[in-house]
Length: 372
Image (cartoon, rainbow, N blue to C red):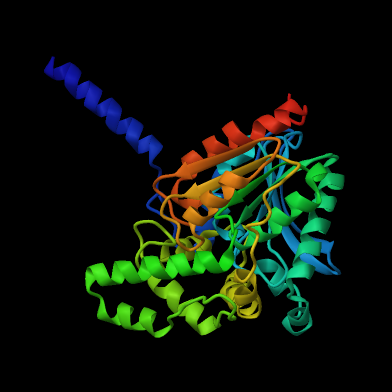
């Protein structure tokens, strides 16, 4: 028995040696790390698609990333938040599973990410208006329908992107299998007030005098009938994020900020301007965006699916749930994510995939718009 045990140990040691070749200790640079990630998520199937390119939308070059294991699957367009807070750079983490069921399109909107880097900011600045952004979204959906030969696609709108998505659902229900809202904006100013109250209550429970002073200094915050000052908004967000109202159990977006550095679709130059783009877009649009009120949008002619983070105060999930109760649509579904705040797809990526397959994809299956 001892001799047999020795032979078994030797065999296991040899196997481990083969499985862990020299140089496998880890990447030495961002380029090495990105190469590893890109290779692990490379699309190799015969009907697959994997491309990053610019398309002409709204008179400028706007960048998209398209990934899926079978282009015959339904198209899902992801409308990122912000304005200017791109999802493409972290999609390597949360999206790979989606690509087996959808052809997923990440789009860096006007003034954001790779699109910001590809255009003169001075030329783009005057065009950063809600109406123009909605027109861009309409053009993008039209482009994808034509490009992939689809009568309908899915649109997923996150945060700011949900304000575009809900309008697409109202204006063009015949373009959509369903609209999927994540961190869905309804009554923007009511959401802001609830977020402020959440942060102040948390600060008082903790006895955080700095936070209490800051938050009380902007009272009455988001008062009805008054414009929202950007400096007040940023102060509210500072403490809301600190107490986990943006990312549950964390004090902000540091993890996502770091993860973006590993984006295969982003060059070093793209990364250098990515946060400049966020500031560029948000400073021009965010206060106006949050003054919107979609709470009267309660009748839709396409299915509506809402993913709601139980701990989301960045966009109030309680406000969204109250609105959803009034929604009338051919089909509707509210999915609660109990361990998430505002970044559901990063916080609960497994449940996000399951929910997309369970509650959204069947609409495409019923229409025959899936790979055989």
